[in-house]
Each structure stands twice: as C-alpha cells, then as structure tokens.
Image 1 (tube, rainbow, N blue to C red):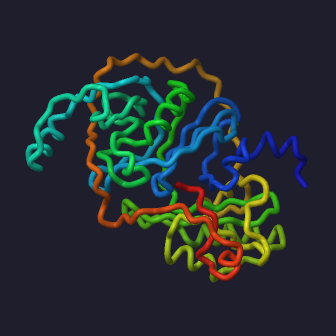
Image 2: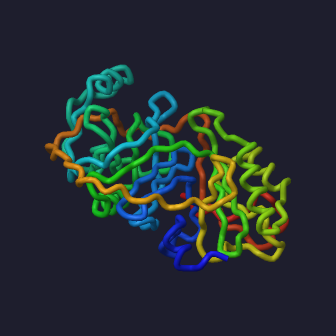
Image 3: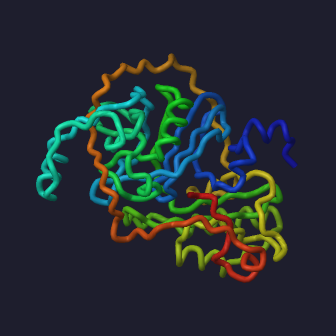
Amino acid sequence: MIKPTFYALSTLMISSSAFAAVPLPDFSVPAQGQQVILNVPQLRLFLFQDGKLIKTYPIAVGKIRTQTPLGKYKIGAKIRNPTWSVPVSIQREMAAGGKTVVKSVPPGPKNPLGPVFVRLGEPKLGLGIHGTNAPSSVPGVRSHGCVRLHSKNALDFAGTVKSGSDAAVIYQQASVNVDGDNDIWVAIYRDPYNKRSLNKSKLNSSINSWAQSHKLNVNQNRLNALIAKPSGVLTCISCSAGKTKVKGTLNSLQWTEGIGAIVKLTNPVWVNPAQVAPEGNSVEVNEDSDNKPEQWEKPIKPIIPKAKAQRNNSNQGFDNLM
C-alpha cells in the first residue's frame, strides 16, 4: 500500500470535498505552481494550484466552424470591464444577419465579454476566457473560439488565476477516475468537433489493468452502454449494488496511454516568472452574443440519481459536471 504522505505528494488529487464527484482529466499537473486545463468535450475548466484542484467551472467553447484551438498556452493579461472592439469579420456577420453593425461595445450588460477578459495565449491569437451576456449559453458549444464562463465565475477565475500560468486546451471524450475504495468511475462525453478520437482499446486496457490489480469486477455492459450513448454522467462500473456515491476523492487514471495507474504530478520547472505585457481596455476577439447551439447539441441538465436507479440502470450515475 502506498503511504499517505507519498500519495498526497505524488498523485493528482482534489483538495476539497466540494469537488469530490467532479471527474478529472488525464493530465499531469505540476507539484508547484498553477495549471489551467480546459477539456472541450467535458465543457469544463479546471484550475490547479500546487497539484490540487482549487476551482472548476462549466464553460462554453467554440462552435465546430470556429473551434477553440487545442494546445498549450500561457495565461496573459486580465482586463476588467473590457470594451469589445468588433472584428471586421463579425461586423460582416452582423450585416449578413440583418443586425445593426457596430464597431465597438462598451462595458455593460450588452457586452458579450462580460465583466472581465483573461487573455489565453498571445494577443495575436485572439483567444480569451471571459464572462458573457448570454448566461444560458454556458455550458455549450456556442462561441467563435473563445471560452465563456458565467460572469460570476469569470470574475472568480480572474481573481484567482495568475498571469503567466500554464494553460492547456485538451480534447478527452472520457474521464476514468478511481475513488477512495479503488472503484472505477467513468464519464463519456459527446464529440462536439466530430473528431472520433475516443480510443476504446486504451480505455478498456487501462480499466482492465486497474481492475485486475485491485481484484475488481468490471460491468462491461454498463461501460458499453456509456460509450454507446455519451451523456457526461459519472457512473461507477465496478461498484457493488449497494454503493451509490463516490467514496472520498477521485483520482484520474492514465487511460489515454492505456495505463491503469494514477496520474502522477510533474516536477516543477524552475523558470523566471513570465512577463505579461498589460493590455488596454479595448479587446478585439472573434466573439458575439449568439445564443444558438450547434445542431448536435441538446441541453444537458444535472442528473441526481436515486439509489434504486443507480443499481438497476447502467446509464444512471452522479452528474456534477455542469
């Protein structure tokens, strides 16, 4: 058995019971410093501090035609009460849609950037994490590439994240986590960008490896049902009939590599703090207040299962994702 002190230092853990049933992505974060992770299919932002999850929020990401680009970035400047400088391309869309063409939108309730804008990557990329004047669009697949949060969450995030911190936009259609009893909990997400990138072989390999080493029985029919009908619902595939709740905290398995082991923290890289240039109040990004979802998307509501339903229906589970 791994000693608790080593376990706390070497594995990806949740620091608060408030996040106990939020599935973590397969991503190794540094033991010291901040890391932002945005998982597009999960429609969720994670903020880690010194290897522990301290903030998590539902998000809206880019539409399939204007996808939020995957990759690694730095958190840039934070701009309070931004003025939205409307790009020419969006002005053309306004004209084509019969809307009044505007060149800029001042701070206020009509501003699609909400009360705060946090730069994601270099300014030339035109990306950011910000609030919204269309709260019903979060979570969803709605934007022109930026990442939207509910405005109160955007303010909370901006007040916590540090400019210069590392950020990553990833695309993982599954979360494979284990709880304090070593039981396996899985959530499968829909494929908003039609990447068809869910590697079922590695998914099964990691699950079976963990199950064998911990003498667990995997309900393969339940797992197959989750894969066949992705819903984002966190479901236990190894629990006994009487267990309906996550025990303790969740830890992610290295399922994207087909490894049935818990994700370890990375050693911090000692570098000089990133120098982030300040920005003016005016922000030019491809964004709008369009509240129309993609064709594939249906509203996702939190599901709080009853104990009986959890035992008898493989598609029931805990959904603290939204």
